Length: 492
Image (cartoon, rainbow, N blue to C red):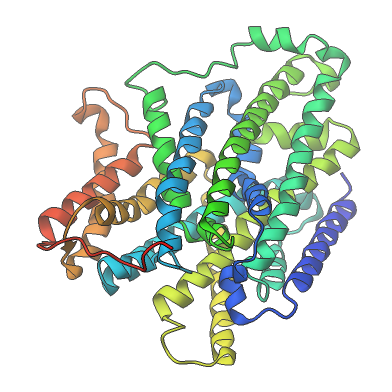
């Protein structure tokens, strides 16, 4: 693909996003950056959340893993769908009842300021790591397949892309993100469906259904209880990954909380869960079709060494130019939702939860100045993390993403679960210590799980173990007697 054509697409796409940001932020006050003035349409939020949840990791890694893992990833996705219904039924009503802008305000009301800031700090660490892994995946593909040939260094690519994202998110906030995510989801799904249609209509793939059924790549259920892919472990892990990475994540929740009523927010979450399940099935189907297409011998395509390179290699080197363009647009659409919403959420959480921007008596102009400085500071951190992952060159991106999530979201899940299901509250000074110690202790358990647990291999359920250790630590080391504090106004 021509580098000039690629760069034209990227900058044209950016100008479109910049236009949306300008339009949606007209006449908006500073509060709109955080809450979207509670005027978002639930079905628009539901559609846009598909792009945010899938990201470049799903776009690149899920099709690539099909040959080795079959469709066993679907076990995790089923858990995701169940988790979204739990978030809709339990956490969304709580957040609306408390009229929260930052969801970590619950920890302040339930426990105190130390727990509140500890929870916010773990979210910031979690989202910073998770978002930058997703950004790295997409930037690395663009770099390897196009920009390296131009002599453009990865560092410059990362700087320019993050600068573009800062420019269109600096003013609009959540109100802008809801609409840009919708556009990006549309393009991403267009690339997915367009590729499937092209492959299934190729002359060599007329019998693709029978090829698929005999390929051995569509197995879903793993029944080996010792394996980290055992179906019960995967489904359970999927449920709690969703509760932690969506229900306890400011980025995902701030979009839901921008909807006017809790009823509409619940509809958004439930519809989204069903659509997401179907979209992941399409990504798994795409992965199987890509491998079958390679094995058909068309174009003389060779199997790439890295699974993550299968989709981009075929799209950019072997498929028609129009499909390569569609892939690039879809890939860029997977990049921007990973960065823009995370950058906005991290800015919001830092300003509201750590700085306490609304409790200092500052006027709107001063709040805006501080918020914009925090936004730029977060962008610098994004750049630093992306460059770190580039230098680290981790090969198993989707596993790395969920590994990081297990260790960083685990303390958050433990804090919220303790507050919701137990009476009393922890001694505040012990909360940060326990939340830091729990993932460290779990890391060593997982390292030696085969020796300690009779061959059992710990996988994504790390999240549950960290959360459980956090809850035990809060109960044993920090528990204070007393009834659970009821927080927030009564439901209307």
